[in-house]
Image: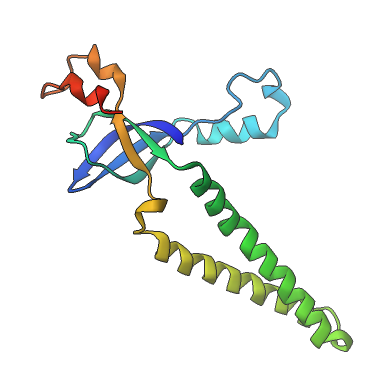
Length: 165
């Protein structure tokens, strides 16, 4: 399970909108000055990502929670979003090469771009299909343990919440 801390922005029945601080993996790297990833990370630092997560807990805006997602979901989503359009681009270019071999490069490039566009449309359709599937949604796992010592929450928290899992 992939876990991340988040802050509750809004709540609803069975879900919560969470703000997640964007972070990179290169925070402790010594080669930060010459690394392109570190340079890009500076552009994204401080920005928050708003995510809708399923929740069975009674949450309030401002609560810090731990949100999780199954390991394979992230990998499958990345493969779908990045690999499928590239594969369809190559298939389109190969079909264009086979069909328009004597016509030059323009029809091959055009058929490759059509394949890429088709790939993006397929990804969009599949994303809409999976959007409401609970297996592919992040889930609020628990309140962050930081609330045990913080008196900032307006309503008391039962310590039994932390013993559920």
